[in-house]
Amino acid sequence: MSLLNRRRALQWMGATACASTLSAPALAQSGKTIRLLVGFPAGGGTDAIARLLGEHLKDELGAAVIVENKPGAGGQLAAQALKGAAPDGTTYFLTHDHTVSILPLVVKNPGFDTARDFVPVAGFANFANAWALSGGTPAKSVPEYVAWIKGAGGGKGAVGIPAPASVPEFLVKVLGDKFRLDLVAAPYRGSAPMIADMLGNQIAAGVGSIPDFIESHRSGKLRVVAVMGSARQATLPDVPTLAEVGLPGFEELPFYGIFAPTGTPKAALDAFSAALAKVIAIPEVRERLTAMGLAVGFMSQAQFAARERAYTAVWSRIIKDSGFQPQ
Image 1: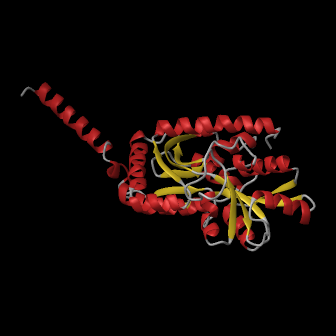
Image 2: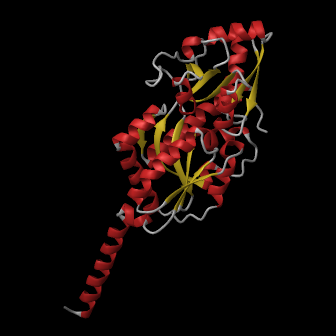
Image 3: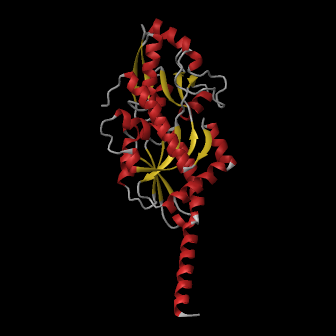
């Protein structure tokens, strides 16, 4: 073999080895500790989802996966942390729609730009927000709640929400307008403290996600009385949709997915996406996520990016029509 041909053969072998390395999901992350950022406190629905997935992702990625809670401002602090993270394939952000789609519409300077600073990795579920009542509230349905507030509260009432300027806050406003109630949205730092106050009967009602409410609803400590979506949720078949109680227009469901800092190598993104697809296909994981109130379904990077853009467009119109001015 001539010297030139030997050089070409070595170059081909090197390129083949490199391609093989990049195609191996576990090796793409091997030896690294993966940070999975969560923008809400430990104990809440999002945290529980992250810890469940993280426990199984470590096996698929061949690396430790650490869930890192950065609660505050509706996930804004976690999003800012993601923006500032090195795009080396070790930092990811597990989030729902509020932080990446809603916050940029309601906050003038959120400290990040979803389209510019983040890259979608994959989506793994849709879910529905829900209207729930505390156990100490005598009402057991939306009509009963409306009648109770008009009677006992003189038409005034506070409704807990997990974050200010969120989908739940706009829902509270629509509910108040629809039923001619003076409802005030009371923002919390995540769903966990809101639910704690509801369980303690410190606040009579709250709007949050089904994953946040589902266990307390099943135990009878809280009562979910209406859900978003075009159809009733499989986990709560007896609970009517908002449209059924007179509030159409909330059929577009929120989502859960993973983001990474812009500039993260494609090999790392592909490895994480492939690992996530395998994890949510595990029967035990899928069953537990479904029990939390999620409609589990894998979305590729392209599918998830399109889903986020479409969702943002819908809520951009709703927020604009509400007259809300970014703060």
